[in-house]
Amino acid sequence: MADLLVHGIGQLVTNDPAHGGRLGIVADGAVLIESGVVAWAGPEGLLSRPSGDVTEIDVSGAAVIPGFVDCHTHVAFAGDRADEFAMRLRGATYEEIMASGGGIASTVQATRAATDDELFAATAERTRRMLAAGTTTVEIKSGYGLDFTTERRLLEVITRIGAETPMEVIPTFLGAHVVPPEFADDREEYVRRVIGEMLPSCAPLARFCDVFCDRGAFTTGEARAILVAAAEHGLGARMHAEQLAVTGAATLAAELGAASADHLDHAGLGDLEALAAAGTVAVLLPGVSLSMRLPFPDAAAFRESGVTVAIATDANPGTSYVLSMQFVVALACLEMGMTPEEAVWSATRGGALALGLHQHGCLRAGSPGDLVVLDADSYVHLAYQPGANLARMVVKGGVPVLSEPGPTS
Ligand code: NIG
Ligand code: FE
Image 1 (cartoon, rainbow, N blue to C red):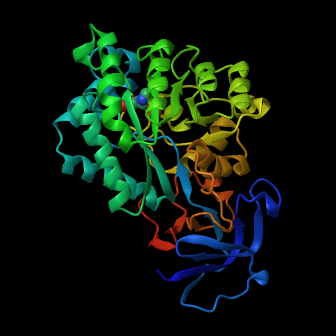
Image 2 (image 1 turned 90 degrees about the vertical axis):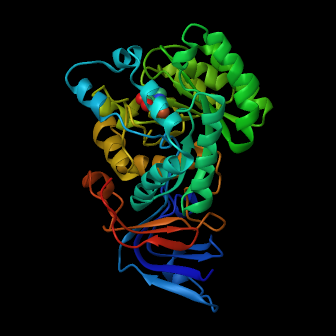
Image 3 (image 1 turned 135 degrees about the vertical axis):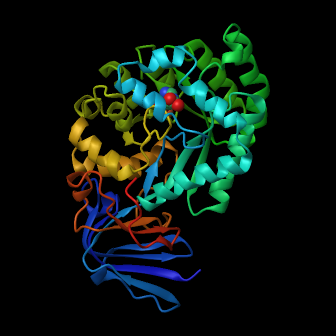
């Protein structure tokens, strides 16, 4: 692999506090990537020019940011739910649709019926669009199989995305997404199967275990049992917490030392302080508030609590068919009250920390050579031009994977 020098960078966001401030901004910067890994990032005037075989790209004053780390997605699924989306806009609620056998259950039906290759093609097309919008690392959850065979198949497809496309993938087992219809009358048996059969089969393919712990999904008691068992299989914990109702899921996430607690629309300040004390990252998903026409979480409470905040797409066919982290940055600023500085950090470094990826989400020696050259001279444009695809070039592991703006996702 030839080394890559990206230079002529008008504004380089490193997320390395050594350069000052939260975003570690360097004016007139350069990034040298060797064997896929950042060897040096800083002011171009201080660069000692490498002598070997180096591809040089002059970006003529553009801004460069680390590749986005989308730390919460459900992009491995078949079919879509455009019909339900239209029903919701006519007044039906998400929980009514879910209770009448639609919602997650209808995606489960389509996913079980799809072949491995169909699932791979549909998922790869979505991750291609994510990459085109600047996401270079994505967490993908299972959770639309909800049986022994299909949960495992989904994790195999998710693994293939990481192996056969440029996108870096962190797989999460979400067998406890909802209780599938065939166990509606015996949820205890479903939880037993998740723990006793699905976890042992799926754990080798996953890095994390997630539970949708909420009204209409799993209780805190069930979530605890599943996540404790998952830890015995070597999986870190993440939780869908306080999305639809106050359940105590956030404090459970803190108690279990989960890597992240996600959604948190109904979390109180005490919950956020508990997460902060536990080192659990709060993942906010404003695409859901937009798509569900619900109030957005207020960034001020999160700021006050001191919790580390990540933002992510929650890309899924029901509540947030949003694939672009650029759009999430814009929503976080315009609807949640984050500053552009906070939002860009949360979409890159925050996402990396939520996934336990301590070298990702920044541009400093030792971090992966993942960056986005913007069609703008400042990262602020990500919020200032909502809906635009400002990714002029996306580099993953030192390789330019896309050098033309992709379709706006
Ligand atoms: O994160 N909260 C649970 N799961 C998804 C929704 C999945 C769906 O509706 O298909 C979410 O919002
Ligand atoms: Fe989710």
